[in-house]
Structure formats: C-alpha cells, structure tokens
Length: 343
Image (cartoon, rainbow, N blue to C red; front, side, top):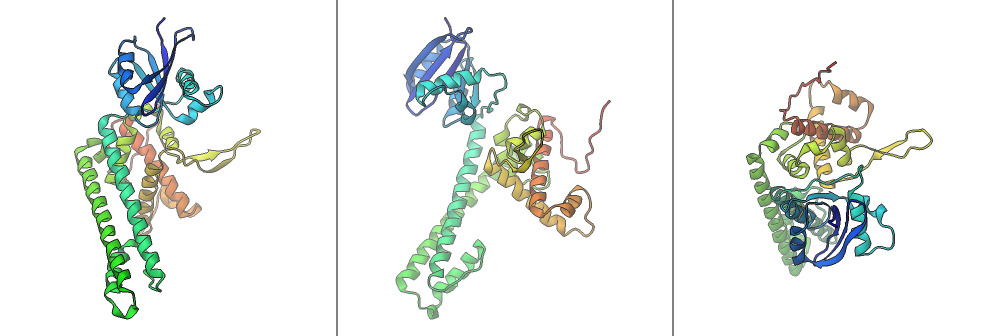
C-alpha cells in the first residue's frame, strides 16, 4: 500500500523515514542515506511529508515539493509531545508523521533560495557586529587594567585609543602598545566587514518593491524591512496582524487559571533578531517624538500612562501589525489611515 503521510527525521548523513497509509497503518519504516532521499521519494506517489524546521529543512522542502509532494515544516517544540517513548531517530520520525497530520498544527513556511540568501547576510552581519562589540570591550578592559578609562560608546575607542598609545606619559610597555595596535587593526577589519555586508543588504533592499514599501513605516529602516520581507515571505500564511506580532514574541505571555486572566511580560518567542530590530526602530521613533513641539495622538497618550520601554514594545507590536496589513492586502502606508467599518 502507498504511504499518504510521511515523517522524516533529518540529519547530516542518515535520515529516518516513517510513513503510514490512509488507514494509519505503517507501510514505511526505514533508515536511508542522504544520497538515497530523492530516489526514494521520486518513485513515491504524492504524499503529505512532515519535517522539523531545522538545518537543511528548507532545502529538502523545496526539493521534495519539486517532486509533487506536499511538504510541511514544524517547530521542534510542537513535535516533541508526540514522541511516545525514549528519544531516537525512529521515534522522532514517527512523532513527526503523527504531528504533521494534526488539523491544528502550526507550520513554518518554506523559504525560497533568495530569502535564505538575504537572511544569511543578516546573520553574518550580526555576527560581525557582536564580534566588533566584544573586541571593543576587550580593548577597553585591557586599558582599564592600566588605569586608562575610555568613555562608553564604540566611537570613543577609535578616537581615544590612538592618542593613548602615542602618549609617552602613561608608562605603557612597548609590547602592550603593539598588542593594542594589533587589536585596533582587528577592530577596524570587523567594522569594515560589517559595513560591506550592510551595503549588500541595502542594495537588495533598493531592488525589492516589498522591502521599500515597508520602509515607509516610521521606525522601520532598510535592515528591518529586508529582514521582515525575507523572514515572513507570504504574509497570508498568518491569519491577521496579531498572529504575526505573536509569532515575533511581541504580545503578553499568559498564565491564567480559574477563569482569572493573568498577563505577564512579552513572550519573547520567535525570531529574537527581528524583534530586536523592531524594538530598536520603535525607540528611535520615541526619541524623535519627544522633540516634537506639540506632541499628540496615540503614542503621546501611551507615554502619559506607561514608561518608555513599554511604549517602545507597544509601538513595535503596532508596526508588526502594519507590516502584515501592507503585505497581505498589498497596500501602501498611509500615516493618517483610519479603518472603515463595514456593515
């Protein structure tokens, strides 16, 4: 009998496959090598295939879709409850096969090659930024051991450190001066790499109509817009803007019981990189808003009731909902837009 639902436990070299027919009877339960995957599924009638959203999942999703199969990706934490026994490859594949057939399961959209390439640029740039910050802190800490304190801010590193190295009155050993010079060269190289990748991201942003459309929203720049477009893909995969905001972890975490609702801080689920970009963009809007001569509107009323951090997260949540509306309904951003209620 042919398999109608298949679960695949992905790995680097050895994959576990578990398939059932329309009556739930196991018809496939085998371990295959990486180079045998395409041959196996090319000879199989179209089926529903489930996989965990892990390394290489999007690649295999595209490959199997090209063979006519319906491929669904799931977050690993949603698959774990379906593991019946101890963890092993066969049990994981069986759990995936069971989970993908659930009608209320939440799925991860499969990214295309362009989306993955843009997100790779973002990840690598973020890695360089983190390394640049760590290198600056190391320089600051080493100089602090000799009683030389540099003000906060990475800009002060490039300005003050060369002056300290050239100053003969601070009694720094020659070997230590050479060491700091070497670390400064490394810091400059990290900064150059980060700026070059950021330029590539901005080039892609200028060529994308969707990314330029999202940039019109206050608090969203080229980095945030390109990351949102590449990560979200088809906005219609989300029911509404609130679901997108919840997917980004910008809604309250709930811990209710006995009919008494209890809302805590934001859930912080989903992509932390996207969430941080939206929150930082909201902070920039707040800074500009505070300098307005006659502030008014929703944001002004919110700042009267709550602190700036809460307002920043609320604005990030609102921007996420606006982004969904722009992408799902193919609209342009309108600053004074008011939704009209239909009977």
